[in-house]
Image (cartoon, rainbow, N blue to C red; front, side):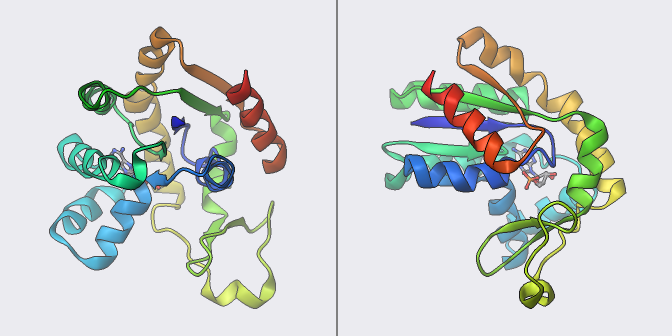
Length: 209
Ligand code: AMP
């Protein structure tokens, strides 16, 4: 299974990806996680990416495309992968398309998790992640156990200002990839409002159809 998860910031892509990769046994490739790891390590790529990420802007295509194409060429991706957060622009979608064509493989599905804009800010601002297990919580909707509260991380781009910018970028830069995949007949729309378990069921249902 080669698939992509698309959706605005706070749509629940990371949460759903974690569940789906366990079912489909494919690597979860999150461009955001890879970039955050590079920032943490202080690599040249990380230092460049950090300038954009802090304010919620997109990292330039040439940086992200190289990083992801290199990753999906690794042996663990030979039988499939789940991309989360990539592609996020039309040039990224086209570059992925060319690389997969050259490798003689095809995408099976692009799952679009749809959540209306007014819900996104609260979802992102209340989000906390556990660096030990990778679990994602929400202070109000999925509160973390009190004993791990001290180690939780609040992303620096999960502020009102950065989320506003990220939502704007989603509409201006990422939404144009939707018709690209619609034309290929592999776009699957899923309502992203509701309990995370219910959304997992909806995704599994569209993938099985
Ligand atoms: P995410 O964890 O997917 O919400 O991504 C966090 C941030 O990383 C984004 O707001 C961008 O600054 C950057 N980023 C992640 N993926 C991409 C991508 N495909 N293209 C450009 N920037 C990206």
